[in-house]
Length: 332
Length: 176
Ligand code: SF4
Ligand code: SF4
Image (tube, rainbow over all chains, first blue to last red; front, top):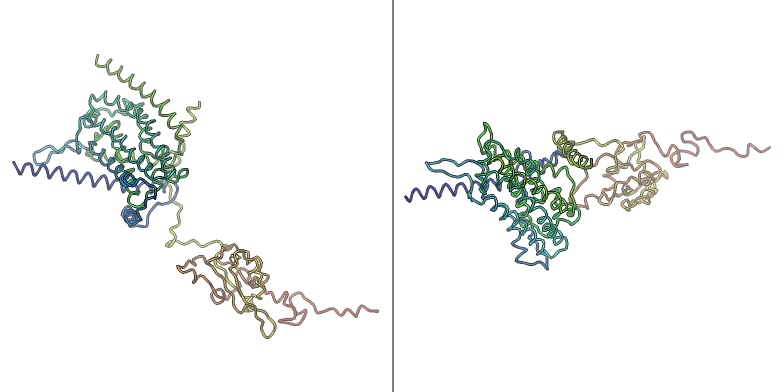
């Protein structure tokens, strides 16, 4: 009995450490991948000095960030300023808890679900934490006591209210079709057909919303380098800036995973093992993020509000209506 | 129509960046790969010599006067035969902006730009080049120009002894 418990506990611990390590490693290497891909798009090689193909660049970046001065502006709100970057990174890491990336594994005669925590309200958890993530940004900008940071955080808030609703509405038909709030069930429901084929409109709305959610081009108004220095993280330096940075890239991994879960069929796919399919799809979405960053200009934030409220929201409602009608009609 | 234009306007840059992703970078990997600059590249300054192997500089101070950042200083001196030269000649490359105005001002083609561009140093003081560092034993961009063959009146040779010159005219032979 005791031994049973110990093995279970150990397995869970190994799983947690593995997921944690993989997510952080992915985030670090996404930075490198982004720099290399953006570089190649501009006909330059990107970082290639540290190690073969610049592969230990993330380590060099880490050392650099750790050894930099941890600067705090004189009229910053000390406590909030110190903990805001941690909030961003923490929220991003916690969101990954509900991502199911493979069907349950069978080891030592017991079933080990390949998700940290299979909540039956996983979708709501994801939506809640994606809204929470903006707190790190807003508080960090607010507490910096600098006008650029303040403008950045106000923009982050205005951005949040413009895309949030549409994002929820884009996922709602998926929940209706899967008849569950659990992400694992949603993936299970796509074993025949990924939802991108049955919900193309919902997919498009969702993609626009996650671009806004990730605060990256074309919706990177909160940190718009060439208008407001670095937006909300203007005053941050060293590892505190690093936490914002890591949070952004973990977010990228998560948004890729969420797109995969909601619309691209999760781990389902022929031939290859499920985990490879899942990672491939999620990383492809991350690549699309980078690709868009290399191609599209920044929008103004009134334009984002226009899109969010006047285009995405009505479209989302329409999609919801049509899906509901279709589901009722099919089920007689 | 407007919607279609917007969609194609969004897609086109994506397509272009995707194509460029698979092109070879044009970067020159500097310390390993070096590019020979074009011959008229303006990098480190040199003091050249005339075809006879003598220093071209006549210490006229024109380069020093023309330099917009005042980084050339020198001291004139005179040979036993009356030929002028620079006793010392100093260029502060920590200040030089490599504009090439000194080379345009120089009447003797003595000071010239060269393609030697790797002169970075850690200590700015080691960027102050003396005459020994600047002097080279060739003619630079013009191998054949010899100032004293054209001007240099009465210094290296008798009056009227230079290329394409003739001796002083005896004005009195026009008298009746
Ligand atoms: S190149 Fe320009 S800046 Fe440099 S010494 Fe000559 S005149 Fe001065
Ligand atoms: S380098 Fe040329 S311009 Fe400068 S002092 Fe010598 S002769 Fe004159």
